[in-house]
Image 1 (cartoon, rainbow, N blue to C red):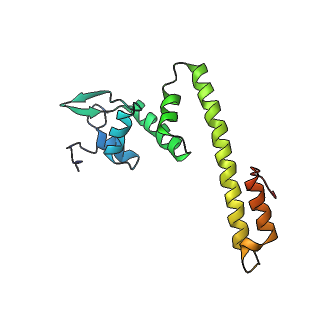
Image 2 (spheres, rainbow, N blue to C red):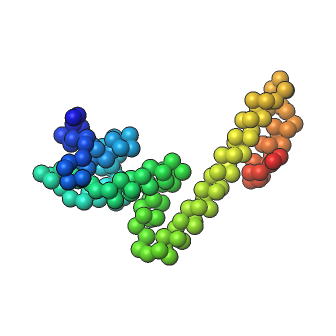
Length: 149
């Protein structure tokens, strides 16, 4: 078994609890990331054994949500707001707002993807001079993320 610099073993103990190293390893994270999330109020250990943090299955779920949320472009503040919402109604409000923001980011990424696809397939010597590419650029400049398709 390997230990992290602070001595945490990277495997669960017999009680099923995880050390910080084991929890981080499940997601390919460095332990300092989990400590940062703790300082941000996103993650709190279930307890400590001999001064070392211990985590349970609920923490695995929470870290998975944080990792997925970050991959979707949510900030740590947005994730904390969502995960710590006081009740279902508040959580749904937060989620609805984040869902809308994610939709905008997806549309923007798709517009970028269409521009790249066109640039790769364009027969023009310089794709930036291509009339179709310029239409894509104009549409994006006007805030239209669904040009030409």
